[in-house]
Image 1 (cartoon, rainbow, N blue to C red):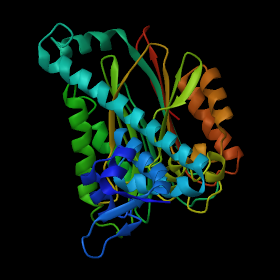
Image 2: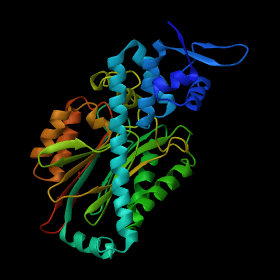
Image 3: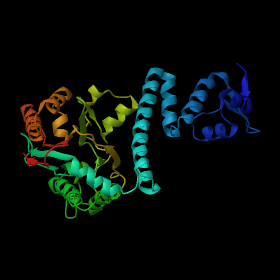
Image 4: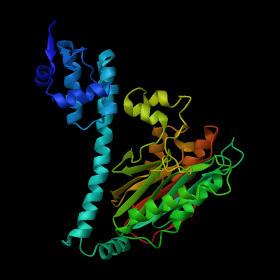
Amino acid sequence: MGELTIGAFARASRLSPKALRLYDELGLLTPARVDGTTGYRYYVEAQLPRARLVAWLRRVGMPLARIGEVCDLYETDPPAAGLVIGAYWTRVETETAARRDLVTFLVDQLSGNPAGKGVEEMSDRAMSEMRMRYAAGSDRGLVRPVNQDTAYAGARLLAVADGFGADGARASGAAVDALVALEESVRGADVLNGLADAVDRVNRGNWEGSSGDSGTTLTAMLWTGSRLALVHVGDTRAYLLRGGEVSRITHDHTLVQSMIDAGSLSAEEATSHPQRALLLRALDGSADHARPDLRLHDVVPGDRYLLCSDGLFTVVGPDDIRHVLRTAAEPADAVSELIALALAEGGPDNVACAVADAVMDGAADGVTV
């Protein structure tokens, strides 16, 4: 098979010579031969499929490090490489949707058009029409000696935190307390900034006086008018029941979830993986691990939201969770039933739940279970 000059290979692969030189330096696309005297790079036709895959993946915006992994996998298992690409694009679409919601919100705030004019006034009016019925509860479970989970539900805030380490209970409580302080003080355009600042303050506190191995996950939603601001770090979760369908609206920051995203692990395999509890993000005092997901989400009358710790969803199956969310008459009933299901499965971990219904009638009411 004849060799191709870098120019000929660039034309055939639709990559520029400059890009080919860069990919050689990175080890992503190594020439078949480099002339020892001139330094010219030569390629062979057998390298074209990999080069064209690199070109396609660059066009969809995949990072170079991930492209190398996909290309290596493609050479041994093309279907698996396809799964990794699909998982990557699903993640991109999710993040793009979150950014689109935020951009729309900011445009409305700053443009001065009717959609953005008087947003706080409109939010207050919407809040006077839409109410939240809510409940929260937590249980030590049947195995753990103490309860390190914290759950909170209020007229504007739902929050669940799952502490870990020697001072995990204090860590989860501090995280939720920081958000409770925002319930009356932050509205409109300040909601996302308020949540981000609160999370940063809690994390920078580094659990002063703790043994150094403590931290917490956190998932919370703060309502502002007909929207909610979601903040999420770790593997506590948020679910939405809308129109009879239940969907998860958070993404776990765990090792096994990253493996599922990459296509190297199935959701079923993840439930028994020995490192299923390993967190990639948490509020543990480390700036590298504490970056939260922040997004805006439209609220529709009839929505039911569930926030929970992993003490629920690791032992109670998704079908049972869906059934409770669909059939429980009130949020307090849903919380009680979900905790009871976790205990019936042996209660191996602390469990925390917060449930809220968006309604248009009557005053908001709340219960702590």
